[in-house]
Length: 218
Image (tube, rainbow, N blue to C red):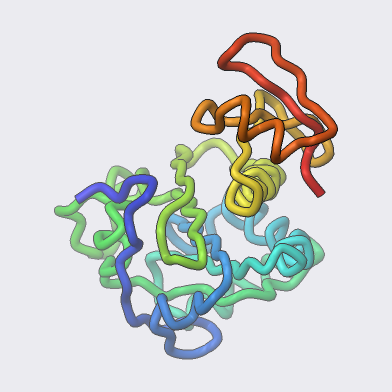
């Protein structure tokens, strides 16, 4: 079954490079990023894991935990981590889930339901598993996307999207196209002009009755 924005993410227990976890308990009261990979020792994912390790301090600042998943055993992850450090210059500094039996991948609809984990695995059993889930402290999906195997994911965009989601959660505002932290934001149509005047006494700009902008709240 597909997992959509607003759904509570399925809980699970799994072995990781940092020990056994129960996912909801591991998230705790923080935000979380779960991102998956088709298998270990793959070139595009090697670059992604290294870049995410470099970005992790930024996620830490945002009260957000990072966890990866690959449909290979944890023992393979440890060997792969050495290659990542060597080629990308940054050691993996977050847990990696071992999912050789595809339990988590199937639970999150990240792989074909008939995939059986056999060796060697056909390419079509790997192709759908490069997914990213942004999860709130309420354990609900706030955003998700999937990339093909050939195109590296943009984790700067994941960070920007997280900033937008957290801003919305705190101030009930929306963000316009290509928004970056510090840019003006949009007052949702669910907020009346009367309430907007109370909330933003310094004023706001009305471009259309349904399109009102205001400086980003602090």
